[in-house]
Amino acid sequence: MAILDIPKKEDNPILREVAKPVKKVDKKLRKLIKDMEETMYNINGVGLAAPQIGLSIQLAVARLNPETKNELILVLINPKITYQSEEMTKMEEGCLSVPGTWGDTLRHKQIIFTYQDLKGQEITLSLEGFNARIIQHEIDHLNGKLYLDHCEKVHEE
Ligand code: NI
Image (cartoon, rainbow, N blue to C red; front, side, top):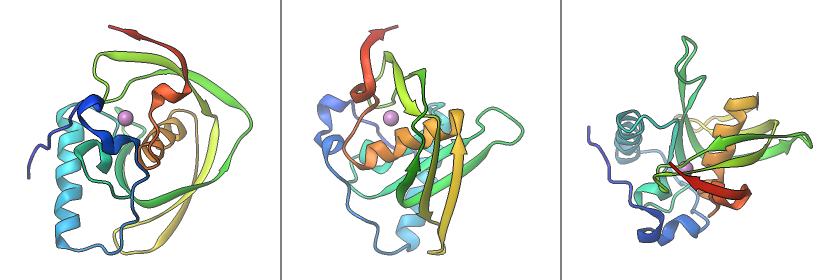
């Protein structure tokens, strides 16, 4: 496995592009997913999207219920949000691509989304609260958006 480089947003124009769909899950993609998981834990993030490591494809890894006994890793291939609640919540967010900066970020309280798993099966999940926030942040990365787009102001450490 390998720790991948996460360039800052200034050095990574791909972060502002809409990523291309993943066409097939092969050995190379499975290795990339393992490396992304290792990189995410190495830097203690709760999610990592392929554009953050310079790959413009619809792939992200994320931790649900992070730092609890119910923690699990979700591998999102071609994810799409199909429902988002009108109710919003605000919480401080940061991003591995924007190091040293945080901001109160508005997110939908609940979402329903679909994605493909490693076997190509389509999965539908409903999440709320912090878990929904993590997934919204990662799916944003696949659509050229950053948490900064949902903040009134950001602050440094
Ligand atoms: Ni991020």
